[in-house]
Amino acid sequence: MKKSIENLYGRKYTGGRKIPMRSRRKSEIDRYPNEAVIGNDVQVTRRVRGDNSKTALKTVEFANVSNVEENKTTKSKILRVIKNTANKDYERRGVITKGTVIETELGLARVISRPGQVGVINAVQLKK
Image (cartoon, rainbow, N blue to C red; front, side, top):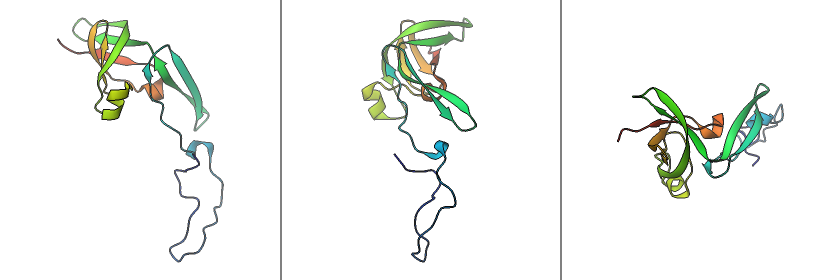
């Protein structure tokens, strides 16, 4: 995917050709989104702007589930995706994003982290 955030190439309103003053930066190149699904833990680390790095989840098996009433956090196995408000297709395919309701061994939980950006799944247990 060579599409860029900034419009370096194209035409002027008169129809003339634009000549870019610079080439694309690595951070401007478009990427496919990282869609975390249930499976054995696989992480991808990529370099981003400012020589920083982002860790994304490709597949994930466990989530850190926090219980607000007991003030306790436990690592729990993810069983399946119940609801994904971001996209109906994600719900059908079992993709985990922020706001997804997942079923864990402890019960239902809502994801509050961004698995494609952070590389970990943190969730809050829903009341029964």
